[in-house]
Length: 289
Image (cartoon, rainbow, N blue to C red):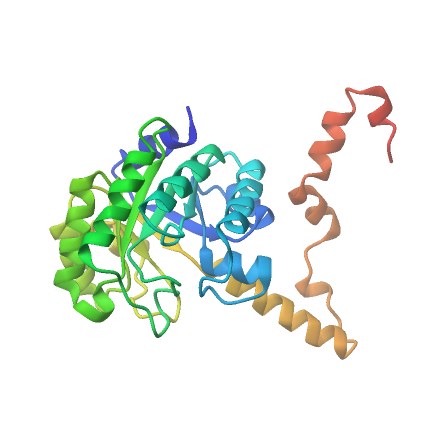
């Protein structure tokens, strides 16, 4: 099956799909090796990883698309990609969706924030008017007609306009053809339940440790009615904590063996063993050390 077909089949299951978000090809590979059935390229994490800068609209469409291609080439599980605001007007949204589709992504997220967008759990974000928001999703749906990439429609209207407006926007996104709905940053479990009870189709929860939305168990999220639980910064936060810790140890010339992955395991997870096994079929390549 194609990546969109695989994702549609997964979403047809009556279960919660736990989705750790990646930020590069290696982190995506680790997600797949851990047995998860899908991953999402977090714009926040990808911006931090690729350009060392916050997710405030600084990374261009071309840079984001290139990152998605690298990730998609490294894994076989469906990749959902962050298409931001679509990088312009409705015609830019069409091009964005087509680009991610050609890159092999299973779904692309398009949101209603005012450009330049911001992380959904940081200050200063605002949304465009209803008409422009609906035009973005309409354009996204039109662009995917031939390729069948799924449209993940996100609204951040809860922040300035309240939950009712956010739910109304998401409902209209579904009517326009969006496949997955994402109401960002509900403040309470009751709001999360209201979202799932009010909206049709698959819904995504954004589980950001330290963010504005309650961090609930997988069982609770499934009971509420979410189809996907995205963990946008769990991997990056863990990686940064580990790296800053080992850098401090290195600066003090302290022991590091206990916090480092064994070199044999590291090589295996990156793919050295597979490479050498495959290359053995070719005489000249197989002789490489």
